[in-house]
Image (cartoon, rainbow, N blue to C red; front, side, top):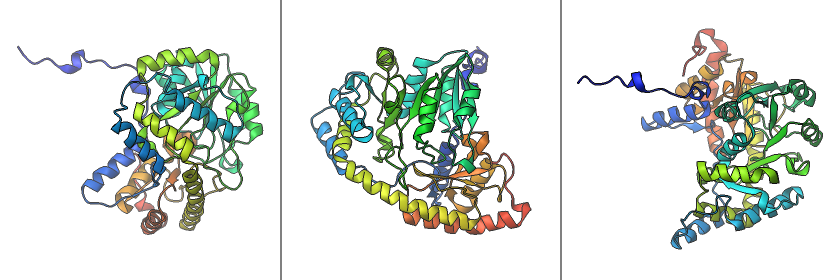
Length: 403
């Protein structure tokens, strides 16, 4: 019998055609290939802090494993961790949040998946200010809903204009997503903007993963300060440098908790038990590390912004938070994807193409500064001769679509 043609029977869901690649990860994966060939890459492409988690985290994991604390937990998370999260929210925002409204997840990506699976379906729309975290629209598309983009502008510090958001609302609008501090722009939305967004009507989904990393006196406003009907998503990856632990949470309206719990039970069961013990340790014993990391990032922000401006990148305003710089690179090429891969291949510097963050960021590049000073120095030194060639000789411009 002749072998069957797999393509004759294998069919894929339509959603896999509309979910786009995560270009930051594609740059990282190509960088890993180059490193296997012996190259030394200066990594500024992914939001991977070059800091160690709080020492208490390692102790907590070691103790949990020694006690064989590796079982399933309540799908909503360990009660002690939910209590610690509620206490942390009181300390940071003055919010009185019951642990009953906290659901612990395997990172904030799982939290986003649960929230949008709970809120939207076919025919629904979600408003996303842009430039935006690349995965926001893909979470929406995964739930067969439609992302609708609302532009922000560099000259206004990438702050959201509530009037533009209001104009984009239709009868199909179910939610508005806001990240503050924002990836990739570093913008922190003023309190009056957050209040205006919360008052518009659609559910406000607030990505607060970069809270605690703000500079120059800027302060984050949580949706939890404004409404009991919004969703606040947060986690341990950024300010506690625990990206590989994959631990996050969502604080949700009381009416949504049972639905989220059922989705969690079916999709993820629960976050890892020993990782949740690490989360408790981070929240209760890790604040000194957060302060030190914030101070170090602020210093590195100044260092990177100054260096990029000297190289010819356009930066209208210094970022207010997170640990990224979104810089205008059109002096060196208009195709940000091609330019990013060109810099990786020729300078061995990893950066993220602006197109990863939406059409509004085409022609820009994102740089992460949560890295060592040596990494920043190395990256700037390697970029200088390559960029000089690109700026001075049009024939050196990256081929469109490369990478």
